Amino acid sequence: MKEFPPNINPEIFTISGIIVGLILEDDYTADELNSIGNWLILVGQIVLTTAAQQQMINNRYQGNSGSRIKSNAHDHSQMNPVLGKKSDIDNLARRVSELENLLRNQNLNK
Image 1 (cartoon, rainbow, N blue to C red):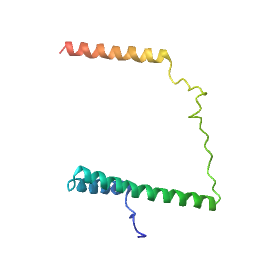
Image 2: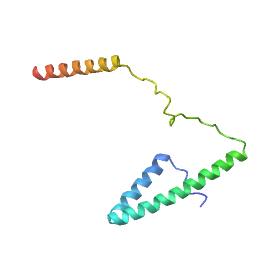
Image 3: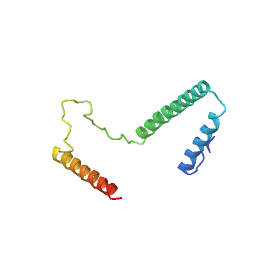
Image 4: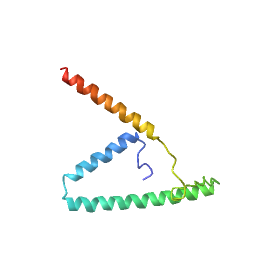
């Protein structure tokens, strides 16, 4: 199976999966589809887990240790940066109101 998956355009490859899924759904009940879908997900998870482990081993063998990404996503002592100010929100609200009035006036003039 060295030639599977085939070297085809990624969008075509995705569309082929969509087509197979649509063909399958007409022939089975909801319970059967649920069982088949879960089985396919299990197969996918096994394939992905095996590939990830092999990729990690290959990277270590090639001396590519990768980057150590530090995240403070779970450190609740850190303050989230302020991305917007109250004046920005007030300005947007005012602009929306102006657009609503403009549209309302245009509808009245028709």
